[in-house]
Image (cartoon, rainbow, N blue to C red; front, side, top):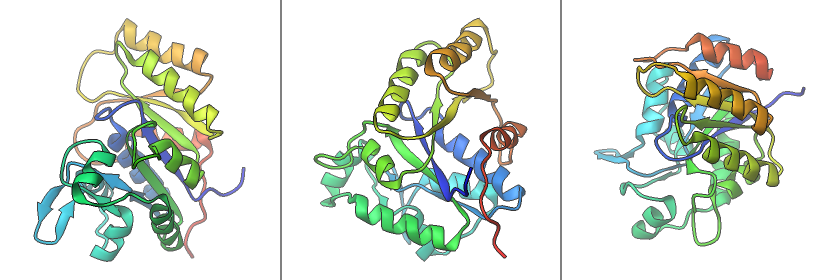
Length: 237
């Protein structure tokens, strides 16, 4: 397997744990000596500050990894921040902005020139619209990165996860695996165990569990994923 410059973290829905997966992988890669950086190309629900709109997902990942990029680099990490907490295409329309895949590709290339590895987090699911005719799936195809799918572990996840995997395959994207994210401390019961096994079998992908964890850090889960997926990136000299 050749060197990869990054991967794309998508999800079956909004608020299902993509950022938790991003933060775990970012910390694990950096602790392994790899100069990895996060990217959230489109963020809705940003909070205003004196320096502009702040991406909560990006800030969470940066805090977890102990990274403090300057304002210029943060603008590359999140080229399209929006205040309304709604679909990207609607937030952009309300702001009088058109989300352009070419601008995101350019920001990704510039980040890749500065860092060995870039972890890109999507917004919502794969068919979330970005503008009048492009979806998150179109962005994923434009970046052509291997994909990780974050999903809920409980009831209802099978349909959403399997449909997401089908769309990714139809788009010709490489799928590294599925992560069932435990967003709160709760028992891992028969439904969750069955969902994990069923996704592995019917989805024909590696599937794992990200255990609930409070605070920053790189759980052992992410270290194991990196080894299993054979994620490699050239270290900076």
